[in-house]
Image (cartoon, rainbow, N blue to C red; front, side):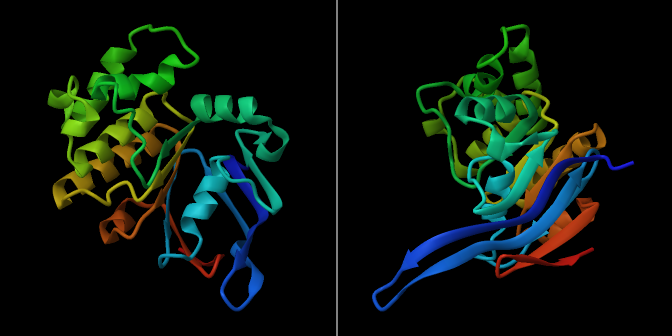
Length: 229
């Protein structure tokens, strides 16, 4: 029985690019098909510019494909309006973006709680948020503001926020980019535990240590998946 919770079918993302001497279409992702199953951690690797982040953002519904289709939890993303996409992301998808997306007027713990409270009552989420911050080694910073945190601490806060709603799908774009070896392994262990608990986890990374946590490794080059292992 197919346990896929994410299905990407023949997806292309095309951009129009104009340079000094010419103008042409450019495929950031080209005819990619893949799936993510419950309970597995998939590592997506490749050189910078190979299309990894674009593919992740299409699975998250943040970017729509030019061709092909993406389905998450049985919902075809192209058929949802903005409100539907927002609700699906909140209820079913946890996203760890490559950049920083903290709200700087909220404390660390309030940043972690915010996605949960968008559609749900406050029924003990602070305890869950503090537990996640503790697992990531920054619970002592719960009442601090993001401006007081280092880049690595902000990264761990964003991981706690992505996990707060117990998502079915976790999409992590370079989640260990700002971290030392000890915290890198802690984060990868937490993502592996999330997969073991039933989530489908996709990790875009250059981190060599991630391979030992992965159930599958996909390699992208020039917008295509060229190897699976």
